[in-house]
Length: 118
Image (tube, rainbow, N blue to C red; front, top):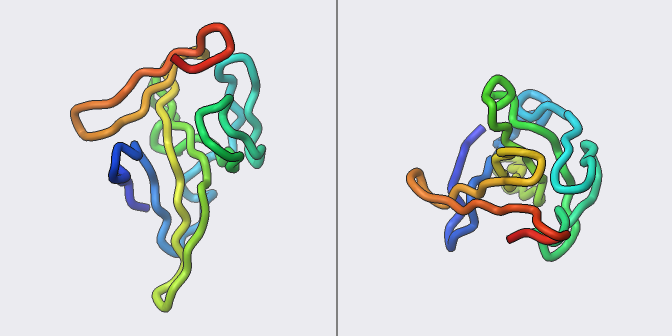
């Protein structure tokens, strides 16, 4: 597993290199905004993404922390060296607040207010 910061302000992500998703991501439901997300759900995360992607679950290393890291599977790629699976991640701060990490020292807060991210 490799934690990355995607370029062009893409935010925090995880890349699995020929690894099993279940070894790093716990398929756990989570409540954010005004809805419950179940592992395997296709979602645009209430308008955060331009098209639906799969909610995978919570990063296992974050389960003991007070802020959980939600992972969304964006796709796979394969070449001669094997398969890579890409995930986009957000920190869950509260039921109505998430955080996207852009560098090691900066990020952006999103608050769910009146049915939209602000």
